[in-house]
Amino acid sequence: MPDAVPIEGFVAWCLQHVTGHEKGEAQRFQVRRFQALGHGGVKETGAGTAVFSQPGNALYSKR
Image 1 (spheres, rainbow, N blue to C red):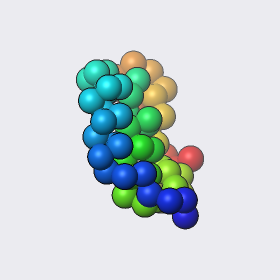
Image 2: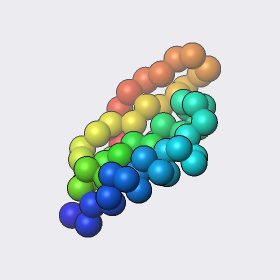
Image 3: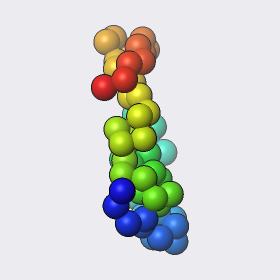
């Protein structure tokens, strides 16, 4: 497990980079959040990611 990113650094990153575009920012946000909590990232925690086959139709799978 990598060293945790200080939570202050995560908050500063959010204030600078998160603009509210959910589909475009969600994965980067989750990776940074997991790192701030001491985890490696999305895949290292076993979390699934959304797969969009058609606009408006999300199918969830673990990748």
